[in-house]
Image (cartoon, rainbow, N blue to C red; front, side, top):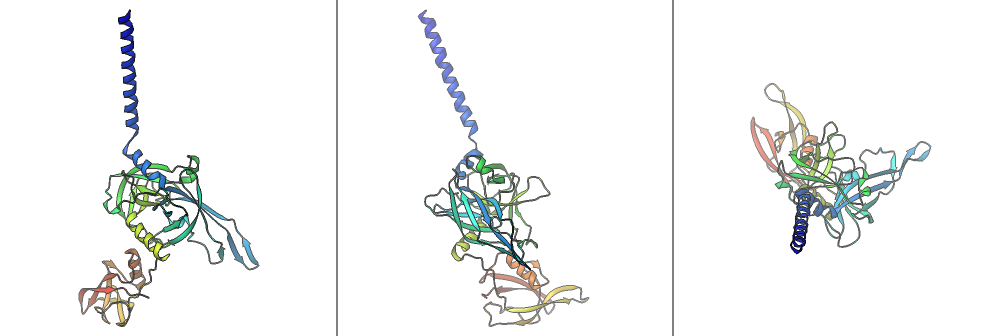
Length: 354
């Protein structure tokens, strides 16, 4: 009898041990690289809510329009409350001159549901980046990665507030996962919005309205990009601004409040047809101001500019577009390709201050 009881006890203990082992295995199987990355980055992801009154100027006076409201995503980049997001979450780019807007009101909701009024430190519609600030200390924030090290095929996780779902999930960011499907995706300068959509990170992680401004993170939980837009005519093609470029813009916004892209080139030029058959187009330099703030000593009157940094140009506007594309400022150098006495030469120009 005693032996039977002892056998039952041993059998029961062994069964408990196996059940514990099974529970441990299940626990380990639920913890993946993706779940760990989400857990690391989520405390710094925020929902962004904008409201703004709009008034239209008419012949008879003024007429109140329906207030503008929208939601998007963002993420804290410092414990003292600085937040990165997309500029289009903060300001519309298509308002007509007859439309008058009041001050923009921005509310930021952090994980857990606490809401803060945010101030706009600065925004730049061309790069589509805005820097916000909320008052407080010791905020959880996202670790910034290195977008120059991003590889096609690595895990990519999008975090944010798609369709305002963050409020339906105990104020925790919504996650979607995929891979980096391409890097350096290039859309050039958008003629309608004026945005610079170059060198983007492409991912198949699902993005929806409201994801804009949220972080794209890697398997280490580090931010590698800012989710910005999707291709409407495709499935699961989302694009993010590389974080290295975004951080450069944010640092300048923090310092100056604006991105000043005004530069002087120190010469004037006009479109010209040249070549034996006059079938080639270039920019004929008709005047060079050597006293200008630009360093342009390598240029001469009569030079015909045909390219800037390897991009074919046929107008001064196209040169300006190259400067925007390369995010150049006063003091930066640019290489111009010119035709001089039938020879093709590369000359240097240092952009001057206005």
